[in-house]
Image (tube, rainbow, N blue to C red; front, side):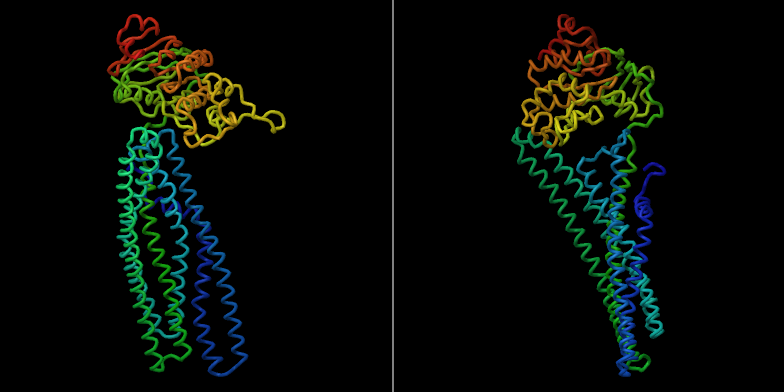
Length: 578
């Protein structure tokens, strides 16, 4: 873990500090509530000695009024404290979710390494909630300790031996409770890890459900998830058994402790050292002590689970970034001249490539890995192992990743759509809401960029086939559309962004040939004068490019115009016409 990186303890500390005022307020109210509850058996003992034993009605009424006041205060404090503590946990969990979201969305990347998306979702929900619960139970723990102290003081006033018994017995009980919670902490962490993995596998299978059905691989997918789910269930049951054992052991210890207090109190009453009222108060306090001890048991368990979840959150927050963030912004205006100088990464081997500003360039490769690694370099999702990539003469490594991606947009082949309307999906690329016509009652009027993008991608044809046109709500990831329709909407979103440099990876593989040819000619027109790179083997798209570069074995083999390469290069012809 990098120096200064968040740790589980730091995550817990920040969660509590961020809610400091609420924790303090809830603790004060909780202590008042517990103090009043502890005083109830004391007041009842006083009533027995000063009113019942003497037969004084006036004294009885006065003490009953005191008792009523205690109940009024403790009930009011309880309700207010409960409301504040619940809000404390929710606010702490929300703050953690925001931190996790910011880290996951960091343009430098890194959190997705070796983690399924569902696992990150589980950490941002379940683990954040458990750490938020720690901020909630802090006030419970403070209140419970206050109750124990008040009870001990009250018992000291009744009898020094009883008070000392409580004061000297509490620390060992708390220490034993902490030791007993260790197995629960370990098993809770394992349970959360298995649950997160099961969530990730489920999300992975759901996203590929159509592919699995098409391959007839449903049984294999079910078997995979069943195994993962059973592992998660086994871990959850182990954690549940551990928690049950933890709570049972604590309750047994506290039960013995309270029984000892009752026995000692009874002996002192028989000996005449304390009165009947004081005996009643002592027994009442002994029974009351069960509540604070149970509360501490609950707090211990929540702390154990919270520490385990905090470590998992810290691992995400401390994930090393994939690319180091530069400080510079691209020169304005962005001309869009890209250059690769001896770039090696994965399947790429010393690529030297010059992509002039304003040109429409096609890049052809038979190796999908080479295409994927090239896209990672151009998007700066990874930095080359060797060599540099430059934008208008400035190395990408020195540019701020977020500023770079506002200048260079890499649209991957497998881009997902959002669960929203078709027009909102396209507007997401434009980065702003389109204004509405007239008084806002009519259909939305698209911005010029959105209109051009819809037409250039032939997504306007898709809208005409939908029941509500561009306002039709799409299913999750656009699954209500066909593959070709999804591609056209995703292409429209990329074009609507109107970036100085646009890199498209196989944007029309699921589109029919007639529509693809129409998209190719419109694409050239809409991107005229701006740098556009098409990583594809589509002859329709390559035919409208200014130049085609051919990669082979991870390096540049040749380049030229599409028609010239078709005529002179047999390997190229076989690749694009296959």
